[in-house]
Length: 220
Image (cartoon, rainbow, N blue to C red; front, side, top):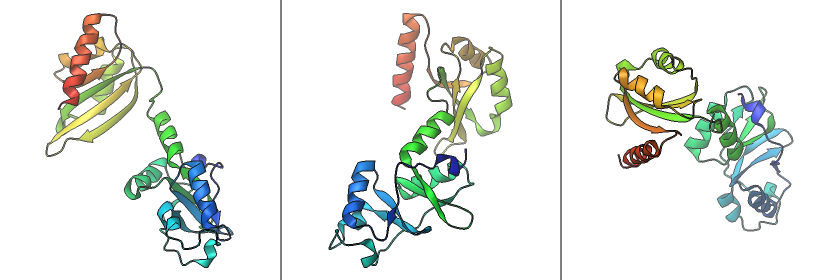
């Protein structure tokens, strides 16, 4: 998934002839706190909600002010992860997209990023979630996939994170099975540490055990 495919036409850029009042109106309408400012096809930077509030005459054209604009952007060919990184690092609600000549093409909103990333992570797909804790040297995705697929299941998505001040990793797997009990037993048989499970099964006892496991996981 590249940036060009995520550009939205729903949120227009501001032009230097637009007023601060229009900027505030659009920010409220589109539920964002930043908007791109352009001059023709030239991207000048992002103007923020607080920038507009600092204007003495918000009804005057933006060209009348010396604005201190931040200028984050991504190129049209980069991966969605680059957009997510900028949004995270800079606290943005929108990220401008430029072509290889530096011309403004459009923007990607934080909401469309969340929506697309949820699709990439198979968030809406039916299935269960398995959280493993393992040493860095023991991590083998091919081995983990083999154990899952040995139970006629598939890994839909995964997230790998390191635990603070530790040599251990936490691996979260989304698997295309609503009942993970057989898969859990397989991992336990191969001495994997199962930190948490979230899935459906047929017995009340299983439901209670998973609820207790979930509460213990939250309290760690």
